[in-house]
Image 1: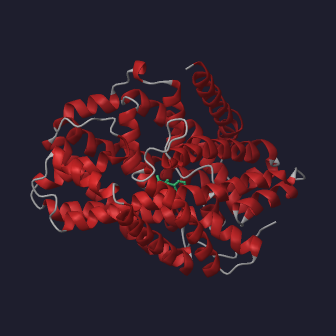
Image 2: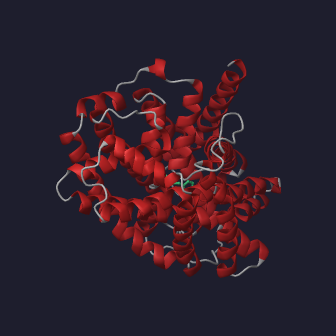
Image 3: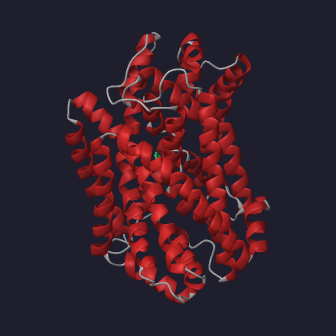
Amino acid sequence: MARKSVHGQWSSRLAFILAATGSAVGLGNIWKFPYVTGENGGGAFVLVYILCVACVGLPIMVAEILIGRRGRQNPMDSMGSLARDDGCSPHWQWVGLMGVFAGFLILSFYSVIAGWAVAYFFRAATGLFRGVTATSSKQIFQRMIADPERLIAWHTAFLAMTMFITARGVASGLERASKIMMPALFVILLIMVGYGLHAGDAQRAIDFLFRADFHRLSAAGVLEAMGQAFFSLSLGMGAIMIYGSYLPAGISITRSALVVAVSDTVVALLAGLAIFPVVFSQHLHVGSGPGLIFVTLPIAFGHMPYGALFGALFFLLLVFAAWTSAISLMEPPVTWLVERHRMSRFGATLFTGGVVWVLGLGTVFSFNLWSGVTLWHMTFFDAVDNLTSNIMLPLGGFAISVFAAGVMARESSAQELQAAPTVYRVWRFLARFVAPAAVALVFLNAIGVLRFR
Ligand code: PHE
């Protein structure tokens, strides 16, 4: 039976692709991918990451869009209704609810980091980075994260921007923003890559990113590559599912998913090519963690012609990339509150924003007041990041793919996918066996490693 989303629809296939790419391309590609690659030794991690995107991420993305378009509701009710349609246990809805909670949690730290990008936009624009050295760039960054008040202010600003768009409804605001922002981001990234390869240590960067040395990759690193694939593709928590619920009938799900996954991966690799040449030429530490791009890129901007302009542009586009992702992180909680708890969209946005703001304080304090407060060597930020990316998203993705390809009736999924028989069979095989098995294996392996460490 054909349902309709109460929240509206994308106007075209392009609008969906841009919005979904907007969700996928974000801090995960430009901020997180380079630093987790750095922490995990480079090439081997990149290779495992790409494998995870192709064999696990892509089939799960198709599964999410399919469930969303057929269910046309928030993740919890879409999964519940589809289960009931096909006579399966309604308990599958709890997978959707986990996604709603993941939305609150991820957005809480996402907004804090995106706040850094907003702060850096102003710093770059005012020429603060002119002539900056490796040492002074590190100092600028450390001074910022040591100050909870400043971090809270930027976190608040970014969250308010996100709430503003969410409250107005996604379909109209988001479509136009993505149409301008996504191509612009791509162009600026290419300029940065050009600069990095030209002025930095290109050879070492390419070796580091593309020469696979498996001795440097641990089982925990493999889990992290998978977690990063889920995070970067916005999978496992219903964001892409919701975007699928706004997708008009008759648009190819498999082809759209392929475009989104490939673009997301290309952007991540380009970000690596822009950043690592500078890291190596400036003798910065590749494993320096979340501050990596905020320390390295200002050095590049500080020395290039029109650096203030390019720097400002880059951080502005980073803000937009993060913004289009943050909006998609808000959708699962907001649609859930609207449909389940009969809130208005405005009320639901305020409520979600309030919860996220408070949770975000934990991340803010992880870099200063609470930096010494750790659990299993993790700060609050590390714990939320780990819990969501490495546990909740893979678990959610596992369940979503088993549900779409193994639990829902074959007729339902085939009817919704409308793909050529071979494409359907390949997808079903990947989503039913390969993706769940890969997630399970990586999990067990990582648990084994943790136990024997
Ligand atoms: N994919 C986004 C990024 O790479 C983050 C995100 C995760 C967005 C999960 C939505 C859902 O920055």
